[in-house]
Image (cartoon, rainbow, N blue to C red; front, top):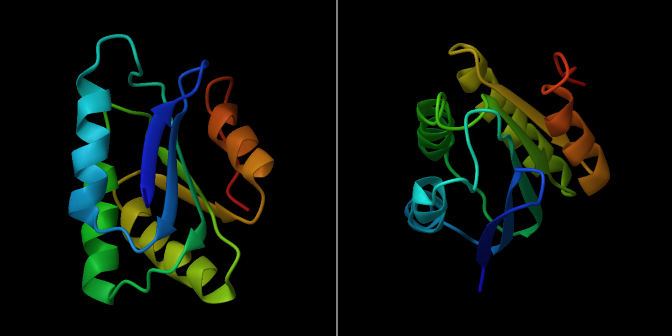
Length: 131
């Protein structure tokens, strides 16, 4: 399956992407988890492991994705860490971050899954730092 969504034992929503995944496919997998009582909550950040993603979303799609993540504020923590390896994917995540930050939603791109989890979890004790 090109998309897997699960909640870690400490409440981080982990999304693993392989190949190309649409926003509708993400919503289809994510919404049932949001509706599962006790699985996650307003302090739960999202970590997306997109190291095996082949997607190259358009500017319009980047805006749609940013708006979608912003729409989750209140249901999940307003922060998202995205793990990418390809240089152009870093740029795409940074563009998405620019749109989301206008609404108080933080998006962080990095190349290491442990770094992503550390940044995502940092907001629980204080404020995370965007690198």
